[in-house]
Amino acid sequence: MSYLEQITIGIPVRIDSWERKRNLLALLHYISSSGMRVHVWDAGSEECQFPDDICSKITYTYERDENLVYHKTRYVNLLLREISTPIVAIWDADIIFSLSQLGASIQAIIERKYVMSIPYNGVVKMLSKKQSEAYILSGQRYDHLVSHDDMYARLMWRPSCGGVFVVDREKYLRYGGDNERFISWGPEDAERIRRMEILGESVHWTNGGPLYHLWHPRGENSRYSIEKLAFINRMEFIKVCSMGQNELRAYVKSW
Picture 1 (tube, helix red, strand yellow):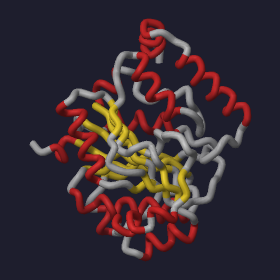
Picture 2 (spheres, helix red, strand yellow; picture 1 turned 90 degrees about the horizontal axis):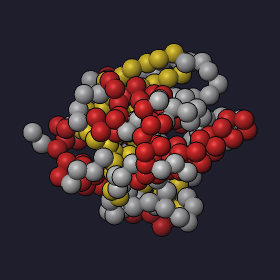
Picture 3 (cartoon, helix red, strand yellow; picture 1 turned 30 degrees about the vertical axis):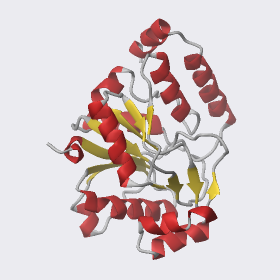
């Protein structure tokens, strides 16, 4: 069995703008030739329609969800439980990065027994609206991103950890899966890594290259839009980070 046969790409998404759908289609076009399994879990007010050539290459689940807040961590866990391959990459719909970096993460999990790997070097390059349109017009070629890399703005000047992560599915679920106490957009990416570290599991990072983020409008689920939920999310992050290993193990079992 090859490494690619052991992984499924899980894409949790709420299609809240036509740019989000455009980005999702670009991502599916990019990864469709790899032969990897892909499962899109769409939770929103309207079911997405895909071209026939895409439909034949993916598993698509639609769940009607008209809540204002997109509870992403819940849908991540639904994907993890539904998928049957030993390795899962949870991949945001607006993200493109080198598939060779994904291969390095798969190898680290299989051969070096990591529970989690981040398949990029901590650098996120943000494409503007026009730059994203240019990428689409290029035929969604990865070499277009590489050749224009210097033109893209870097997100923060410290390592990022969001956008995509790769896990040993069964082990990650035993460690709690995603923390569903993060109800809206927030620090769940950082919590995920810190929780693994407290539980005694080092997180693997690849050093092959950055992650590219395609532009989309920043709606209610792409920022701290509800202050009460933002406060709850921050307090949950602090709570987890302040725990020792035994306390955290007990806490995870209560989920």
